[in-house]
Length: 55
Image 1 (tube, rainbow, N blue to C red):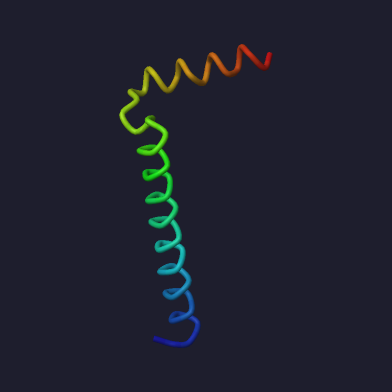
Image 2: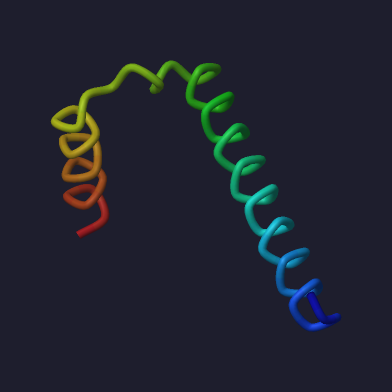
């Protein structure tokens, strides 16, 4: 693999690590604030309520 290919592979690996880290952080935050077990319906209800408040 040439240097360009190696750099692209390294960049892709870094993006993947950042994405996994962000997902883990969001999951941890959801556990802490009690939203980890919300259904899609409950999430949508929260969104609509918030939109109504700010309309």
